[in-house]
Image (cartoon, rainbow, N blue to C red; front, side):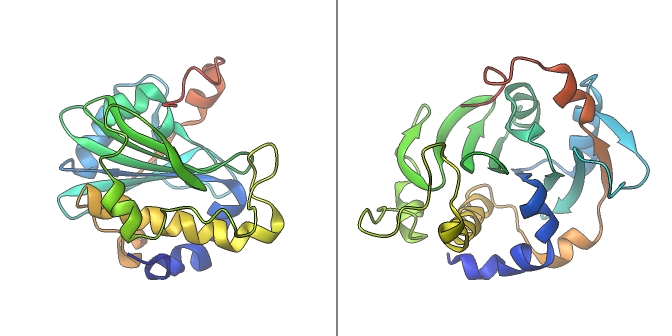
Length: 216
C-alpha cells in the first residue's frame, strides 16, 4: 500500500492541499443516501454546481458499494455530529488535512471512534480499539515511526517546509489504508463525476465550540 498509488491526488488536486480538505470513505451507503442524511442536518444544503471560489463545498461520489465525500477547505466529516450521521449502521474512514495543524485519521463505526491518530505520528492512537489497525499501518510503512529521521513538525504540530513531501506521502499512504479498510475504491475516474454538491459553510460558521465538535 504505497502512497505512490495515489500520487495523482496530490498532483491533480493541488488546490485541496493548499486550502485543506476532508476526505471521508463511507461503506455501504450510495451517494444518494449520504445526501439525504446530510440534508437532515440543518447546516448542510444542496447546491446545483460547485463554486470554485467558495470553501466548505463537499462533493459526493459513487464508489463501489459505498461513497466518497471530499470537502475542499473544510472538515465537516471530522466533526462529531456529521461523523455520527454518516457512520450510522455502517463504518467510515476519515482523513482530514488541515492547512494549520497536523493531518489526522479516524475510523468510526456506528458513531464510535474505533481508532484515530495523527498521521505524522500514529504511535499515539485513540479510540475503543486503538491497536486494531496495526497490521495495516505497518504494511503501509506508517509504523514504526523513524525517530532518527528528519523532524517533520514544528512545536505547533504543523508540517515544516522541509518535511512537506514526506508529509504528503504519509497522507497518501493513509488514504490507501482508509480505502481498503472500508472497501471503498479511490480512483481518479471516480472523481470526474460528482453525484451531488453540498454546502457545509453554515456548519462551520454556526458551531462555535471549535475543539469539542471534533472527533478527537
